[in-house]
Length: 142
Image (tube, rainbow, N blue to C red; front, side):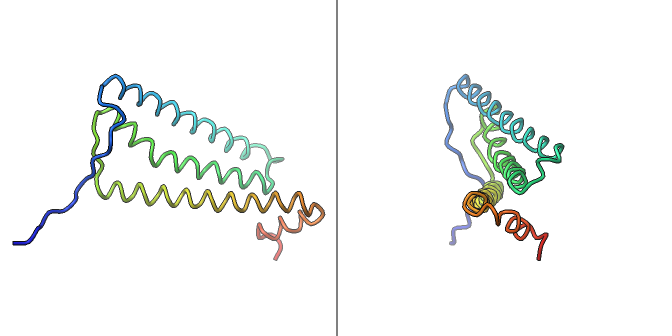
């Protein structure tokens, strides 16, 4: 006789067992989520609307805001739902998808921060060559 059991879902560790604390966690998660959406949305709107901010630094900041919105939206909604509905389960596929997207977005943020650091290094250490290097790295001058 073979073991034919399979994993269909995981049980997450609860932040609190009492309902009042679960609702408090939901409110805190909602406040953090709304603050992240509002802050990154304002950055995206400001950079998109003001043509003076269409420089490499602000282009990187715009992309960083998009990546941050994605990474926050990957994890917090499930945590809020679990706190609100007093559940602890997440499907195996849902956990795998959430982990994949979160790691993909975090690696993207790390790569983008590395490029931003190189951009600032060029602007500070080689100010006379900055425009040429910025155009070459953006693909405008080949």
